[in-house]
Length: 251
Ligand code: MN3
Image (cartoon, rainbow, N blue to C red):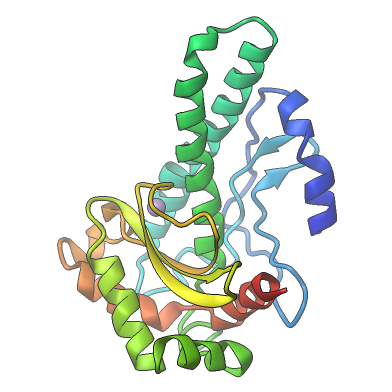
């Protein structure tokens, strides 16, 4: 689905069914995506059924080893991410129910909070899967081109960016994320923290690189050593897809 189709389909979710999408094989590899101007397909929306859906990973669940293990990837996708997909669909459906007179209008606040948490969680993970690739096969290395220039301009050097990004991720309290994003107002790159799935990220920022620091993202392999996980994550960053998001955000 292209961006135009996504936008065209979006209102349908407000009117649509409450059925939840059941992906046939969440680990079936998708085709390689990204590139100079082609938008990333986050694969998180089922237009036919007007529901959010669990995407297929763009690589095998074990392909990020030894940096991120297959069991962590499987549980992360099929349990944690799946929970956000289901939660987002439920919140949309419940808010629709309230509009149509079938629910308690005093629960709009509750379901709005649920929508914020679960839909943010869904989008965050759709992005996260696309922002990684097997080490040496699209993952790792260093950014190039305009993105590399912008990192040097806004952080001083790649090394200073990495140190800042890892510190931001290390210092997230509890579950959350660190993001590199484009501030749409200034067109600068900024690093921000996000608590839970939705708190603290400045509204102006379009995220282009994020790392999940919820314990479910690393605890099986790294236990309490979040810093080791963050160092390993650097080996699987898909800089090509980061650059694609950067180009889109700079337009
Ligand atoms: Mn997660």
